Image (cartoon, rainbow over all chains, first blue to last red; front, side, top):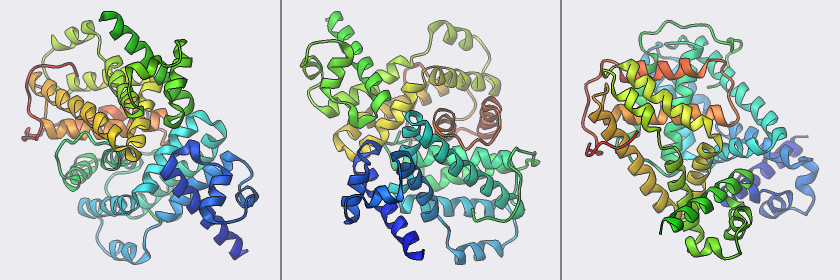
Length: 205
Length: 205
C-alpha cells in the first residue's frame, strides 16, 4: 500500500516534468512511463484516463507545496498581525517560486481544463479545497480580515506569481515590496465578513 | 499593403482559434493555413518562424482588446476619482471577459514563452509596451496613484481574470465586488511614486 502511494507520487512527479517540458498537450501515459523509467502501461494502471492523470498532477502539486512543520510552528508562536500575515504570504511565495515549474504547471492545468470538462471537475475540487483550507487557517490563526480578504490576496498573488514565473510586464518593482503592499492595503483595517467558505479544522496554509 | 495587413490579421485570428482549441503545442503554420482556409504555405509567408507566429498572436490580442473610442471619450469627460478608475478597470474586465479565449490565449503564450526564449523576447516587448502605455494613460488622466498602483492593479486583475476564465477557486464573491475592493484598497489615499515606466504620449488603456 505504502509502495503504491510512493509509486503513484513518483509517476505524478514524472508527469509534472513532462508537463514542464512540453505543456499539457504532450502529457500522455506513455510519456509519463518513459520519463519515470517504468514499463509501458504502468501510468495507465494508476491513472485510468488522461483527465485522471492530469487531475492527479493538480493534487500532487498541492502536496509538494505542503509547508514545513518547523516554519509553521515558528509562525504560529507569534501574535496575529499584518506583519505575521505578510510573513505567511511571503512563505507561500517562497515555496511557489522555489519550485517554479509546479506553479506554472498549475496554471497550465487550469487552462487545459477549459478544454476538458472532466479535468475541470477534478481540478475544481482541488482548488476549492485549497481555498477553503486557506480561509479556515486564516480565521483560526486570528489573522486580519476574513474569507473576502483571503480571496483578494489569492487573486493578487496569483497575478504576481504569473508575472514572476512567465513573461513579465517588467514594471520594475521589487516582488517583496509588491507583496507587502498587497497585504497592508488589502487586509488592513477591515472587518471580517462572512464568505461561503466556513472555517473548520485547522489545515496548513 | 492594406490588404497585407488585413490578411495578416485574418491569419492571426485563425491562429488564435487554433490556440484556443488545442493549446500552444497545436499551433503550427499548417494548422493556421487550414483554419484560415488559405493555401498551405501562406502563414509561413507572413510569419517566418513558429516564434514569430506565436509572438504575432500576442500583438493581435492587444489589438483586439483596443477600447472603443466612444466609451473612452465618455470616460475622459469625467473628473478623475477612484470611481472613475474603477470604471476604467471595469471596462478592461468587460473587454477581456467578452473575448475570454483571447485572455486565455495570452496566459498560454506567457507559459509557452517559458519554453521558447525567442517568443519570450517578442511577447516581453508587447507586454512591457502595454504596461508602459497603461501607466502613461493613468498619469495623464490624473487618476489616483501612479506606476506602482498600476502594477498592483495589473497583477490583481490578472489573478482575478485567471479565476474567472479558468478553473475557479469558487470563493463565492461577486467579481465586481472584488474589482471595487481592489481599486478602492489598492489606489486610495496613496501618493504616486516614480516607477521605471515614465508617462509619455496619451495611449489607450
